[in-house]
Image 1 (cartoon, rainbow, N blue to C red):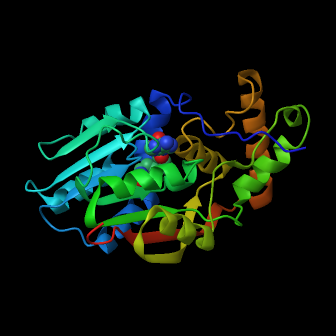
Image 2 (cartoon, helix red, strand yellow; image 1 turned 60 degrees about the horizontal axis):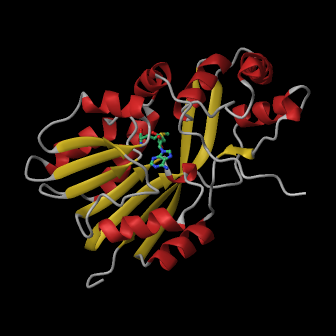
Length: 275
Ligand SMILES: C[S@@+](CC[C@H](N)C(=O)[O-])C[C@H]1O[C@@H](n2cnc3c(N)ncnc32)[C@H](O)[C@@H]1O
């Protein structure tokens, strides 16, 4: 029997989670985004689309680089995050509620670069969004993204899986990989090629994040998953599952911090000149 596909829900976010994300993303997530932006070699005057911009920290950084002769548009489906991002708006930096699955409101060839920092694995369908990204890029425009490849499981993800496999939580169909849709290097290359991208470069970079304890690791995941951490469970079971995961994870690390070690996939591609 095949399990139904469980996709991320975009209506589980809250002001509290959005604020937590704004705080928690200021370190590792932002650093990874800045490195992606650096590698894209943006220059003053360029027009950039930041898809899944969250609370807008990275888009603001990009706006500083492209300057007032350029422009940055950040889009995200989460209203609470866009509300925080709008506090950063300037003449050449705008934020809209929007979804990678529907860029119909954006004109063809209207951006020099499109980027997604830690967003691609949240998209169940890849082909549709990639077709939109290449459409809104000018010929020669660049795509840059960071994402998590499959085949790695953090200690927190392991604890979560173990707890959710036990009653009463096991009665609720759960996705094996959270609600993430990760693709490996070969699949990524194929998807980009099918969408029409060229000059594809894919790197795997070691990434490490340390949390003081299990509670801090869970708080980060809750904020970065915008309510999807235990979103498949009925509301009345979530607090109990959370506590059991916390206990299990803390038992794994004892009095040591929780260290999350993974490889991040960093991807660059270009729309062909003349396309
Ligand atoms: C881990 S956060 C990354 C936020 C931001 N890029 C950053 O670097 O801090 C993942 C983001 O992906 C966004 N996201 C999820 N599904 C999306 C979709 N279908 N279209 C656009 N963004 C989406 C979420 O709303 C969330 O803000």
